[in-house]
Amino acid sequence: MAGDIISVIRQSAPSLSPSEQRVAMALLADVEFAIHASNAELARSARVSEPTVTRFSRSVGCRGVRDLKVRLAQAMAVGRIYVELPPHVGTDLARPALWRSVFQEIRRAIAAAEEGLRKEDIERAAEAISRCSKLAAFGVGGGSTLAAMEVQNRFFRLGIAVSHTSDPSLMRMIAATLGEGDVVVAISTTGAASEVIEAAAIAKRYGALIVAITRPQSRLASIADIALGLHVPEAPDALKPTASRYALLAAIDLLAASTAYCKPLEAQTRMRRIKYELLKGTDGNSNGPLGD
Image 1 (cartoon, rainbow, N blue to C red):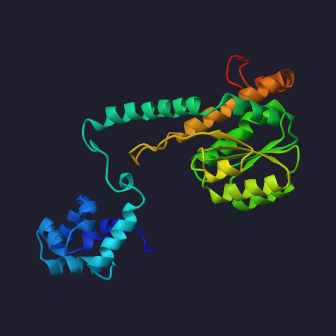
Image 2 (tube, rainbow, N blue to C red):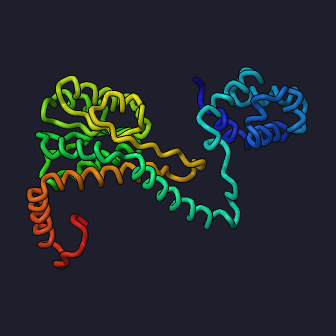
């Protein structure tokens, strides 16, 4: 598949002729219309001749108008939110609306986690982790990588031998060393990350228990021994970071707290020792968080 044609059009626009620039503006203003319109309709919307539309197509690297439409359709396949800017961008209304919506989506993501996670699944996973020999966390991409790191950050302080990685080759290597008594926390918001699925399958083949934090009924959920189901619909604004990572963090916090409650004295002892050592290098305030 060729590169993103919308980016090509935007980057090429300054070097195009004035009439071709009008075609570019018309296409970018309504990509969906451009995909389905006839050559004559495109020409009318841009106030140019039909041959100008053909010349424009070739100027942006397409073989002709038909090829241009195919590539526009391919670009739209990623979703409208990655092509069209949201309402109010660049206006005085944008900032307060943006601030409200960011916090609203975070709250919705956490509420989705609270509603979707089942108590019995969390308890089974926590019990298994509390007794495991080794815990490995796998995640790739953006939010899932961050979440895998957070698994290590939350569980080492409970006295659990835990590691995380987002490197696909290293995931497979670590998975191959695991066995009975070990646990993998496999994380994917879509449940379709092939690298995580493959590593989890390897670990399961050697006897490790797989806990997946993922979308219900996904490929990853289907191979997990315990699936902690999360589904946070993507917000219709590509300019804002996805809030799904807050749902992942909430699930990990719940899992970590539940694991600590499975081994309370050991967990408390480990955290007390951490706190004791950290206070040596601070002002002695014991009311701060464990680990800054």
